[in-house]
Amino acid sequence: KPFPIFLTSKVIEGFGRGGKQLGIPTANMTEDVVNSVLQSAPNGIYFGLAKTEFEKKVRPMVMSLGWNPYFKNEKLSGEVHIIHNYQSDFYGTQLKVVILGFIRPEADFVDIETLVAEIQRDIDFCLKAVDKEDYKKYFHDKLLSH
Ligand code: ADP
Ligand code: MG
Image 1 (tube, rainbow, N blue to C red):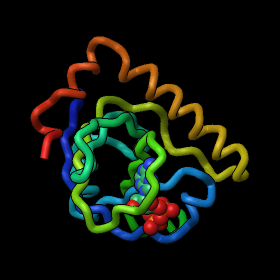
Image 2 (image 1 turned 60 degrees about the vertical axis):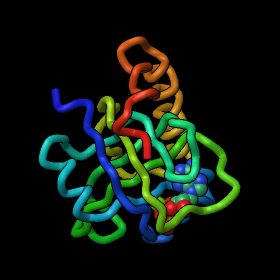
Image 3 (image 1 turned 45 degrees about the vertical axis):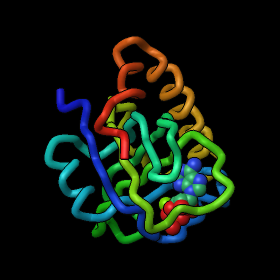
């Protein structure tokens, strides 16, 4: 198993597909970081923990990793939804994440309601998983501190 996988990336602009409008903003990682994860993990939806550079707290996150349908599957993307309601954007800041497990392969495009419901299930799965003994310790991992 490749987990845990620790990553550090600058938060870059995505493609403006309106993650925010769906209530699910995703912090996009740089292409070099995405390429490095794909060396050891297949495309899909993952769960783990994230730490922004401006907070002390480590928070649960769900992440999608794969080819971006918006760009005719020619561009890779890695996007992290942190399970927390932020009051403002944090583009350009450094984000640290640890990927702890695989949830599912990427879904074929369905409708928006189904997509949102699926992501909500991923979030519930993540919150239950990171509460388990095997994963709890990562909340205090030195590699997530800035
Ligand atoms: P983009 O296409 O530029 O990635 P999004 O709609 O996905 O646009 O919004 C992503 C941005 O929203 C992130 O880069 C970050 O600055 C901000 N943001 C606010 N709350 C969150 C959150 N809970 N998780 C991830 N990013 C968030
Ligand atoms: Mg995004």
